[in-house]
Image (cartoon, rainbow, N blue to C red; front, top):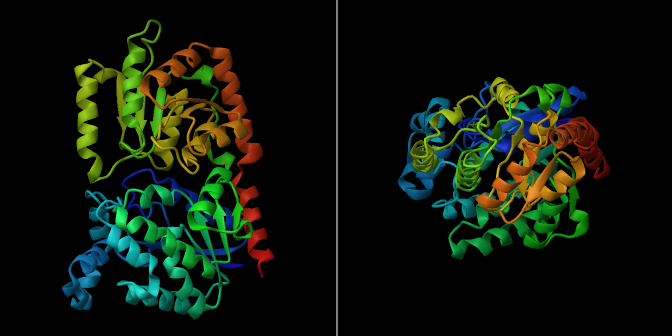
Length: 426
């Protein structure tokens, strides 16, 4: 089967769970013998992705300028190419606002309008490229914020179009109030051109059925997965009792909640050996936030107890998991899934998450962690203080999570489910 995956990039500046999800599915489908091509949008993907010959469509700098200043629509081709060059896009990825919905409401709505939006010429350029270089059987969109592409793709390419669902609410709900409902309404309208939506958890499938007003048959839940053999399992009994955080280091992901919980933990007896290891990268929006956290850590005299790891890609993640015995990413409003949960558990690292979003569902199924509520530093401190000294329970959760990933979250199992959905809709 010939499959196109259209994937928005993060520029590689932070741990992007959606980007990793798409890449892991692509790798699994290729290993199963399918021909799959990743087509990036907005920003480049991670540095290890094999996209040298594929242009980045809808270059973030170019479409942003054209949305704000229509005069740029008349810019010469050479200038547009400069704005869309990978060095320029890499630079833009680290700037403030590059991956935030704040200030981008109008552009989001325009993108959801597809061929009727201001980026309609870029849509046809993408479709022309696909027709010329890689005529496919299936086009799979990374998320419903790209659903505006679907009607035109279906019309011009005559292929089946699928769309994953993951954390669209996080983007839409921070848009200007006057645009929020229009965004959901446009996704509902675009759904008429999508053969099936793929939700990443039952929690999020149910949420999106309500938000986009979908029928049961329009959506299928297929969990995220990893290849367990990609991870090094080390029993927690052989590692230091360190606490880890692996995700974009930002307020939305609750890094300050974990830092405050760690500070409180260090005030208790019996945790002098415990350190906090942080990784996941950031964007320009997060610089001031991270600076404040570092000052807070310094003011508490804990600089030598907190380590920031810059490398969060393949080798960096493996090194991170060697250093920690438990992780927590206390996302303020929860998530549709959280791929870092699987990566942690596959490495034998239990997780402690707030009882929000899909976290209880994933932890319940895997058996590799605990939840706490409400999502406040003192509750997280109590959970950490109860688990870290309990070596027997820590080891049991480590083993259960590792086995749970093999049993329920193997990427090849879910890739076969995805292919079954594609084939059943022929």
